[in-house]
Image (cartoon, rainbow, N blue to C red; front, side, top):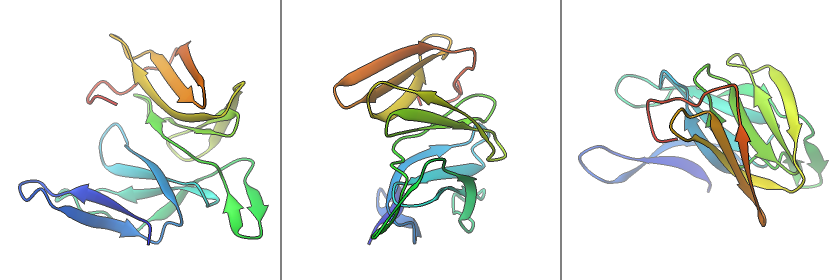
Length: 154
């Protein structure tokens, strides 16, 4: 059964953090590291959970409704894959031939069209204002006004 795991500090053992997400694919922390976001490739929503001081997670909640979800006989298919969060807490996620951006409150801010299906994305560069998007036989390098969170690698 699909679930999200973490490696426990000290023990090095994988610990189940949350289950009940149909197809988790892509995780990211908010800039203050108090919220964990999880994509659900086969769901309608980007999921969020509060991160407690001891590292455990609170109950999952629907954070943002994906745009353009396809409803199939097997259920919804969002195509969500990968996540990036900028220093202002905006969350970006690639899907099909686009990238969707959500506010820190989960509001859809806009969609950036792409010529090929993307799979993952990350802010990088010395000032973290370059967004790299990779996908099936393609890579994009986009100079951004927004800046990625500088407190960790991704």
